[in-house]
Image 1 (cartoon, rainbow, N blue to C red):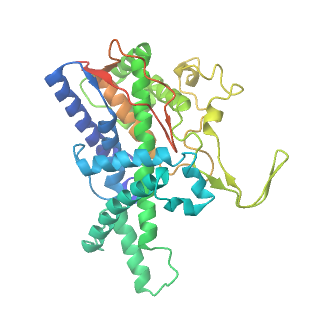
Image 2: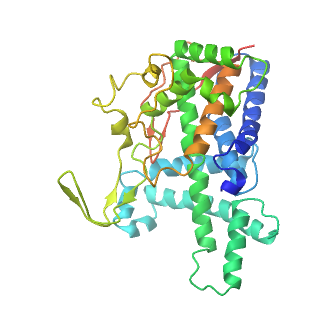
Image 3: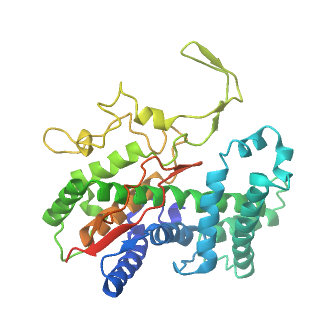
Length: 366
């Protein structure tokens, strides 16, 4: 992944390419219809997903691509039903997966369609593979797999099944969490226009209006960064993190955790703990700033997890989140449609926490 720029500044043009598409589409909507309520989700999800797709599949998709849009919708639904009280029972009674009704049937359908979509790319890559010129992660994996097969390694872990699981994980993890985080930030900006104005004033003062933002501007925009962090704290993308397993029997605060125990870290609780945060349920970006307005790093702020198994895409997600949010706020003003109920901030709980569907009025700032 590092060979293709994961977590490096070389990925910035790829991120900005998606942002250009979002801006162009929003400007076109404004010219055609004026200030109307817009559902940002399809545009944001497409732009974010195209970054990880460029890394692993070597391809970008137009946001009007029906098949790709369907894949993103299926992914959302799959993550939502995967923590359904009935679906969770599959972990205890695996045969439930094959029941021909309810969430069990729907889960199989979702998995089947996403599987077919991704496996087509593996097949296409295998048929067009040039070992001397790898295009993406799939190519590099196939090259290593074929090399081990040629060397007669019978127990190699490099198989097409593993490749499918890897790109499936990366496709889902590299799309859903970051896209939801962007959508949460923009929703909070619409709900808190004074904060939005302050972020935009900071961007105008540091970057101006004549050039695009860059990752090199990040250190000079502490309030913008603090605002993004505060939204992440309140709406942690994966509230119960990813299940881990105890690799050995451990004593922790008087409790014995046997080897093999599944561990579910409650990041939501950490980020709302009143012993760690003053007035934890209140939106307050300044909690991440010191008295001089400089950014504060807090050990109890862990939206990407912590330790050796921290999210491998943390740096990429931070890059996308900063560039997408700050660039859109530099170019547009986001307001809630008049006369409509305030959107819920409870979100839609699944494996990830997605905002409830909402629309915002988007207008160019200049």
